Image (cartoon, rainbow over the protein chains, first blue to last red):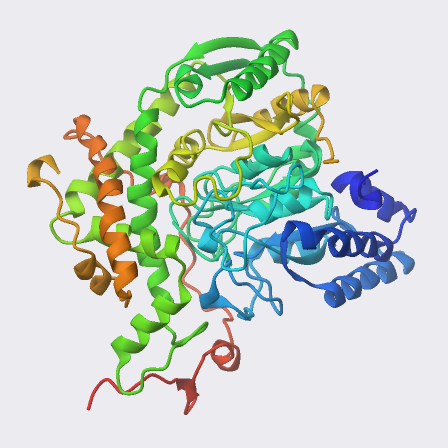
Length: 485
Length: 98
């Protein structure tokens, strides 16, 4: 086993701790030891909460010793993307402008994890403000892929995916705006879920693009990710976009038969730009599902090719507005400019933001500026409607869609860093589901001949997570998550 | 775009609107780089969207409205705890009105 106790997965650990076969402290110690041994090579964690984690674990063990019932995440070490606010623990969103920032409150998902007796072991590396597909935009250096440390683990939740793939912790909270959970899950051979928009509270998620951002789980197996989703989901009055629907027993959904389910395969996701080895692996996974009794048919999502332009207009516009809050006044960095407020704000933002964040703030400001607002921003909002209609139409004919999650396996660090447009085009298969607000996930399928992970993307209709998870579990039975060497 | 002629991306104007004080090298880099990305956005002009409504948010029709009730919020002390400069119980900023 690569990670010993952390290899057991979410459910294996929680059940062991609940039965008293391992203490929460033993599991936490194992996770912390593995982080210490591996993080130097991976740069997956920005902050390791050793003291707090051990204290939390001991408190859980004491409660068990007193005969109190434990929650469904009992003693499970959970790593948290650094964009999610954790009371008393640094939360930088991968940015210099928030270096050292310690939030005075917990995100709703963190409250729910604590209540379920999870142990928070630390905060993971990410592209600054979740803007990127490789973690190379982190102000604190790139995270590395445990399958090949010269390659990226993807982004923006790259540190999260690297940590789970290397079994530093069995699961992780990430966030996905345009693919930031699914693409890194695909590149690291882990399971990653972007829930339906509104399914999981965004309260306490440092905002990038509010109409797209969703928090979701990454884990070493489908059932573990499903359990984590069940804990996090459900209405939260503190997030005005939170849907008033109860959470579900997503773990039970993993046991459902897939026989008779209709799978749509969109031709637009298998065209130019798709690495042939990735295409072959994904087709093999779809053939496996067909052998399991699914009905596979081609479908059309005709506006797919417009998703990249649509997303990069809307997400940058929202980001330029959201990031206006970083002004050196209430929190974060300040570059002093006595007697000149505007100069203080401008200098603070110049010193605090990295190049990609500035690039997106400038693009977003431009598309919202007088004379261009209708031509770019409103136009993209209208095309977003066309993309949504594509999904509405196919989900009248099929139950889920299957495609690659990323057009390529993990690419080398530095390979695309000087070509922002090439980096943006890498998100082509994950952006449409984000724009439509539908749930989507990546689950491992067969690796490439050279051993790099490949992810199958499964997309379902709004609130269709249960069906999506049943398909993912069927795929996992043939291609379980492997540990890197 | 088509209806407005080719877009004119002026980095110094946009940086001013975005409250970013870019140095010369950065401004030059973005001035050469961003028009290429903006040109890619023009791809959307291929679609006739005159009769298509805009999507601002995917689920506005399903969202509950919160009750108008006062609930506990951050304490004054917590709210100020991360501020770079505090004076007289508030956030301190450089003088902007003489």
